[in-house]
Amino acid sequence: MRWWLRRGPTGGRTTMSTGTSGVDLVGDEVARNLARAALFAALTGAFAYVSFPNPVSPAPITLQVLGVFLAGIMLGPAWGGVAMVLYLLAGAVGVPIFAGGSAGIGILFGSTAGYLWSYPITAVLIGVLVHSGLEVRDLRAASTTRLVGAMVAGVVVIYGLGVLGIMAVNDVGFVAAFLAGAAAFIPAEALKIAAALGIVRNERLTAT
Amino acid sequence: MTLTYKPAGTIAHRLDPRSKLGVQIAFAIAAFAHTTLGGLAVLTALGGVLLAVARLPVGRTLWELRFVVVLVTLPVLIEGLTWDTPPFSVAEARGPALASYRVLLIVLVSATYVRSTPIRDSEAAIRWAIPGKAGRLLATGVALVFRFLPVLRADLAATRRAMAARLGSERPLTERMELIAVGGLQRAFGRADRLALAMNARCFAWNPTLPDLRFSRVDLPAFCLTGALLLWAAL
Image 1 (cartoon, rainbow over the protein chains, first blue to last red):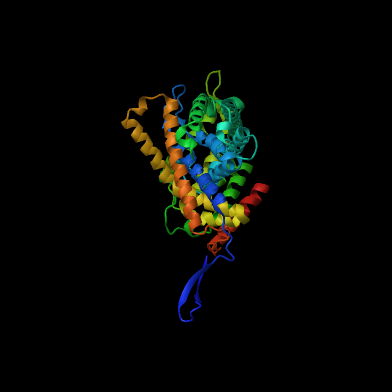
Image 2 (cartoon, helix red, strand yellow):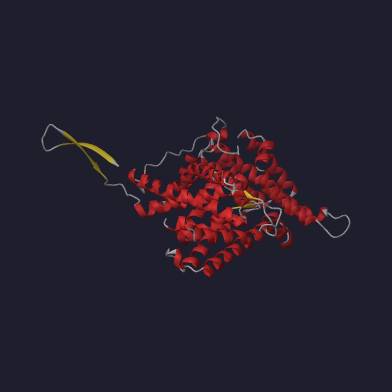
């Protein structure tokens, strides 16, 4: 914003006025959505640090994927996708938000590359399926079947691309990639889907 | 987690973020193009030099990246398993081992960028690389993610402590996940709305004054290295 001093109508007295010419303001709606997308990306990163013992497998459960589900469901396909792009970009330039608190552009070429690159795609897909299009609609209108179906599709994309990523990056066959990167983690996804349903229907959040 | 930016006076710290990004990407392309014993030996030596330039000790960096090391090693071990005796085939695991070692090298080299580049520089580099409104949004978004990660982590930890104090850790797993996520989301949305208001109050604009990014003579070796690596990858 440009400030300048101007002679007032009374001659000797000076008054201060502001000018916004030449400043292209972002606007309330975009600023609000950007803030939400950035906070969602940070929350997905913070979820990577929250782990629970897994009742059905030796691999501990982290809530990262829950962040991807919720980005698509709560922010919709467009801003949910932006949130996940921000997540990847922030991790690439050094914010410690990837699994195990790691960061760096190298991780995007690493063993988890397939999973990470799948996050924006999954958030957009879940958003489109839940909101039946690119426009964000009232979540109360989305049936439980639609929500579960969208998240199951999301799990298929995440693990499909994740396993493909391990096969390409580590140069191993499908069985080794599936055993190392998916078998121990997939059962916990059912629990995350159940938790996501509870979150979406939670009264404390429906007002926001 | 100690593998984050630390101020220092190394050559890596003085380099322009764009030339550092160029070296990393060229290093990764070269590593994928030359996944052979000889190629990886050359890249190991180069990686060692790059880590030394950023004064990043290899052992400690590997310890910080232990999660990545496990993820890289596991598929190789599984691929080498056989039903015969001996139960592990080195010949089967050789190719995957080279591929996985290449990943480790790329991740180590990218750690030098993480250690030597403040987020403001990365923000400016993103604005330079992605023109227009998209670049402005992404650069601001990345800066916000960086600033809010510690706050949101503290929010989640506080929710977990409160749950444990009320014997919430005895609840079924899905309920625990739900409670923590709802607590985290509620606070995140509250923070996002206050932040948006504050950004508008401070005239959040599409055309702000850009920070000054300038290449210097220190960047010249980095340009040459990027060019050499890309040329080698193309051969």
